[in-house]
Length: 276
Length: 233
Image 1 (cartoon, rainbow over the protein chains, first blue to last red):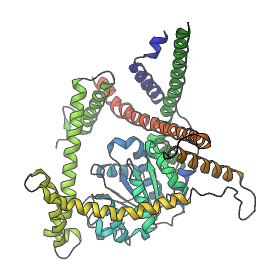
Image 2: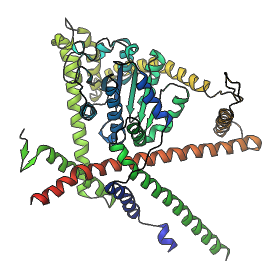
Image 3: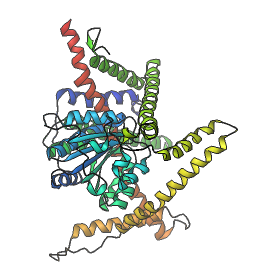
Image 4: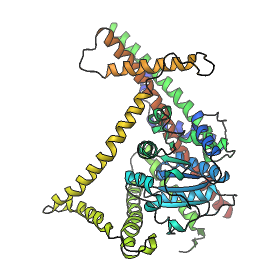
């Protein structure tokens, strides 16, 4: 029996995880999300900005990280638009411009907001550091046209937007080490206000940046997105995912404990066998 | 492009393709198979093709062609011939594929390295100093207004100092890890294990989130189409 448990077919664990996620999802199980000071800091910063401020969202992720970062993008863009701010989005990932379009479709649902007036998708530019540094000197020189080929200078939403001094907050939604680049080249050099939304895998690396106040706040993975959704009073994909997320975590905790018990028992049996 | 095909909208066809490819990828969890391989190759090929298409349109056309040949389209009054210099340097990169002229690729690489180091090193040093500064926390902090002792902040600062010092001890290899120094290094291992545990927890959350994302797609977008087929039938 012990031998069987020690060499348990991993496909049984896959099946258990699928059930732990699938059953709460099908049943619509919900778990309330408590507050988080790091998420609330981003929310408060956007709340406190004067109406008409510019909130920039850098989409530094591709479709592979959508489940974690896309709900954040929708929630933050919607919040900023509801507060009457201008939302300017762009990406340095070639596969992200269409993700921005999708975010605007969802974030503007039921709001009287106009593309080019209240929000804009500037599209994709290569050359990460160059773009961040270039925007510190002249944003219009970096983004001469938007994703729909409209000239930067002709857009109402970018009126008066020349450098980081004209930006209320930059939110970097990242699936790789890009928030550090935003801190190094935009926050340190140009004193821009930077916040980050990161995948949970990376979150641990960015806690020191919160302690040093180089980041205004941070959203950590799907849970961060759910917390933000709660703050703005919506219940979307991230909030609905917290039931399955909690069940899967509970199962993994049980499996870790179970695995350790079985391992300890097998070691004890091996010691007994050796001594006898 | 037709909006309907075989009685299905193009959006529904897209959802069906995405759902079948999702199932094909997850079939790997049972065991490696040709359907998984097909989906994997499709993913790599389509991602690369899409990236090339977007990059051509938004870099070659928007940043090279238009500034030189259609300046009005990018807010300029006259052609920007300076663009030719980085374009030539970019083309030189491709000479790596030539045995005879491959050495020319070193020039743009040198430029990129020099620029990267020049822009990066001062910023990294400044960042490191900033992080070091915030590691030096007061061990006996008082509220500046009420003069009350902030025990939580003091404890946090104390743990921070002990964790940093003992972890550094563990990574100091020029002295043998014996005596008090060895014990400090061993304490450092515990702090490292706590950090790895937190990292593992976050990694689990990230991976489960990806699974939930796919399952939400299957439940909320694909499954209604499947049940719709039966109802229609």
